[in-house]
Length: 126
Image 1 (cartoon, rainbow, N blue to C red):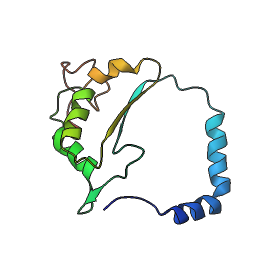
Image 2: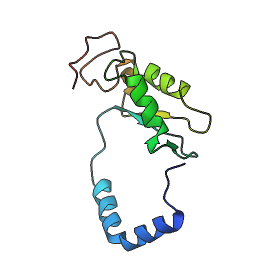
Image 3: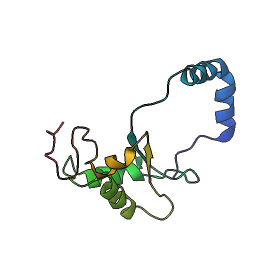
Image 4: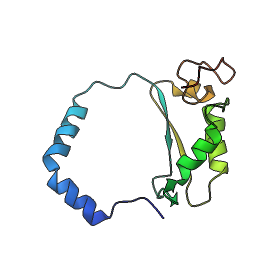
């Protein structure tokens, strides 16, 4: 099973709420450039659909398994590779970077904004 909205339904929603979507677009255009850097994890590539098994997303299930209740201590790069290794060939998770100098973020432990590298002291469990 995949998660998707039929194209005809999507077109109806966009047309029905055109004013709303235009207002969002106009607000976004008027903002200053983003100064932050970041890492973006995605469930699949742009030419793929996110898969689901028994009501749970395949990517989310793999992420939770690897994350192990805040037990993962590696880098974003290692985290992404471990998730990819658990998924089939029809869905490949993405790892994207944005901002001025995001490369240094790859060495950080995922979801721990205060650390400076995979070997840094871990934050308390949330």
